[in-house]
Length: 131
Image (tube, rainbow, N blue to C red; front, side, top):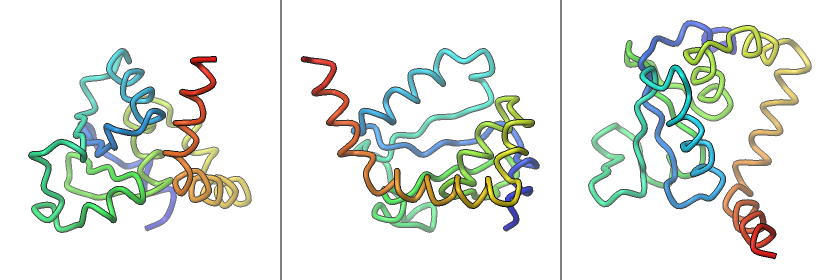
């Protein structure tokens, strides 16, 4: 899928998030207050009733990278999931900038780095908040 395809994501989108991740919890809290929050359905993949297999995926795969499904049933994974999410929230110009050659590749690499460390980074930030 081309990065520009994320600009065609259709609302509402379903964001599959890790409800145990402190950074994810912050993002979900922000999304819950967003003026266009009706465009996003939030699903906690850590919830006992969540079944990744029913979606044709696995819990491990969904924990490894962000997943978004739009109203047309199209899936976006990783940085493309973030792009699709922000496109439906109205940040299309920023999303378009994030797809430009060079910038897009750097953002994709940054996302992969972050995704592997998000839980550890979240715990570190939580400890810093307490100090």
